[in-house]
Length: 385
Image (cartoon, rainbow, N blue to C red; front, side, top):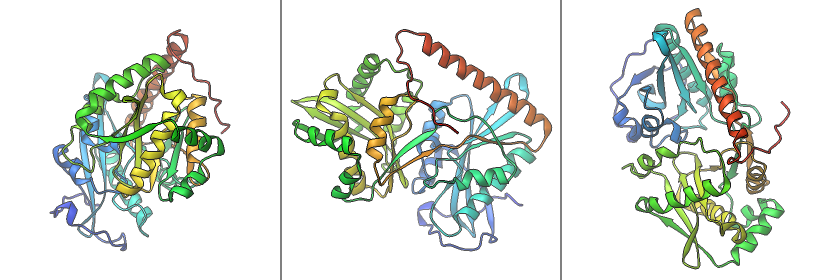
């Protein structure tokens, strides 16, 4: 299959009709500096696939953004991160929450996804002799069609999260339908919050220092081990593209900010990136009030159909809070395991060795966190597989 670059028109001009995937299909490498704007209107876009995020979070990797075209029109993309291995043993090509579809619900979406995987496998695993490691995003149905396609293509199961469930709220409900969807106890706490004299306010990126201070206070108070990508927040909030730039929200009580959140709003799934609360927020039930108004804001101001609350990191309290918010009309669904593919024995050997070493390091880090008296301990029971 030819991977020759096509002459592309500006992405914003493309429409994506459903058409036979046997039509001319190509993969094109683009510059990281232009990548974020090129994928801004993708329904499958996520913050992990932004060059702005990746270059801040993973400064030691090379970024290779690939756009895919079908009959001359952009239909998908994938930010590949090429990670060199120690001692010059080779490299691993990593695609996290990708490849992405520009339109996620067309009749040919699954076929386009398969062609993107085929092109990436041919370039990185076959021609350049790397291990290709792909992590699809969580599906909204019981089966993850993207992960099943990867396994059918010859990929093998790799690492999986200890607590893989994502908690996803349905955004396309009326106020009455949404409140009815919430679990009874969640709705009870929201009703209490409505009477607590709280106010909700969208805020500009210039107010990030207020959120930073609130976030630091919360981490110190709750003693959660913070291994997040919070260091990417300044770069994300400084993005020029308003579609991709996250939104900042606050809840105020008696003139004081008591809760806040940073939300990625592009694509068909908005994502709860970070939240923060003051010591007074619990009694005020400010978290319930905050998320209720974020749900309404996303519904009324974006095209997102879903609100991804993320996972729990093993904390039962987060599980109960998010499960109650997902309610009857949302979805709790797992992120699948990583899928790895190598076309040659050497990249398979060194790639599997590198991933095994990383898992040992992560397990050691979790063990150290459990030993530290100044860290909260995960208390959520793992689901039976």
